[in-house]
Image (cartoon, rainbow, N blue to C red):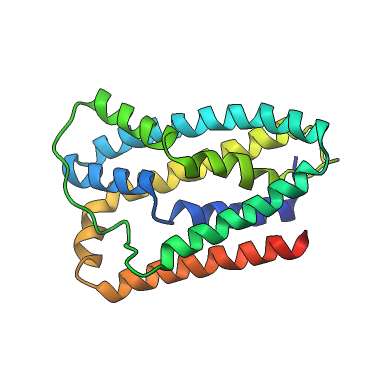
Length: 208
C-alpha cells in the first residue's frame, strides 16, 4: 500500500480531476438535466465501468513495464506532469467553458444511457492517459506489490468519481440554473481548478 502522504497527494489530485470539465462530466450533467437524477446515475455507472476496464488494463501493463524497464517509472512521472498541465490549460484557455454550460438532450432508454456513459469513457483519450501516465506516479516501489498498489489507487479513483458523480447528478439542474446566471462564478471555477492542476504539475516535475 502507498503511504499516507502519497495517498493524501493522490486524493487531492483526483479530486481536482473529478471537478475539472471533461466529456464524462458534461455527459453526466446534461443527461441529468434532460432526464433527471436516475438517468444521471445510470450514465455514471457506465462511465465507472469504463474506468474499471482501463484500470485493469493499466494495472497489468504498468506492472510488467516497471519490472522490465526501471527508467520507465520516471518517464511516466514526466508524462503525468505534462498531462496535468494540459488539463490546467484546458480549464483556463480563452474560449473554455464550464461543464455547467450545457444544452438539454432528448430522452433515451436506460440501456442506451448506460452504454453512452461507458463509451464516453472508453473513447476519451484523457481516461486512458489518467491510468497510463498519472496513476503510476503514486505507485511507490518497495511499498508492496506494484499490481496491488495500482488496483487500490484505481479503485479509489473510481470511488471518488462515483461519489462526486452522484452529487452532480442530484444537483445538476439547480447548479446549472444558478451558475448559468453568474458568469463570474463560472470563470472562477475554471481558474481555481486550472491553478490547482498547474501547481501539482510543477510539483511533480520538480521531484524528477
